Image 1 (cartoon, helix red, strand yellow):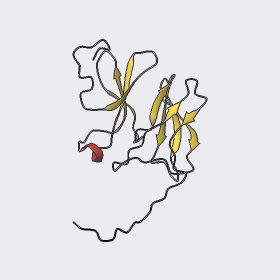
Image 2 (image 1 turned 90 degrees about the horizontal axis):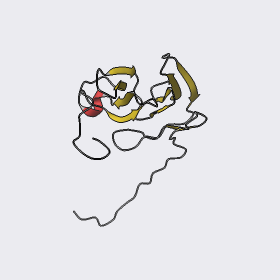
Image 3 (image 1 turned 180 degrees about the vertical axis):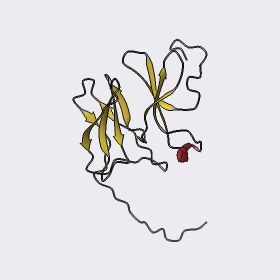
Image 4 (image 1 turned 45 degrees about the horizontal axis):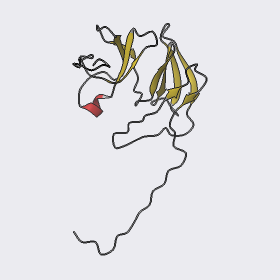
Length: 149
């Protein structure tokens, strides 16, 4: 919908969320979750389409669990299925080349029952990458006496 208000316009035709606009304003990038999460057989990954409308194109054929962002001419993402640990990577949008930036030594943060993560961020110049990680996790088992239903 226009920032000034008005009617909303459907942009994607087969679903998507977490939209981000390219630096040059020509492309809209968005993610699609795995089919088990949304109950539809759409191909997960990062997609793009012209801002003006047009064909949707798969850019990154990986499950990122909401851990991706754009910075300059790059798409940064966490490959959560990499073994033995997840990795942080950079996709050059001009060449299609993927560069591994770092291996995540600890478990990345999972939020909620759906196992979705959030929070990958890159500084404007690409000097810093921020991602969620579990450093410590604990739980307690509690006993409730004289409980009545």
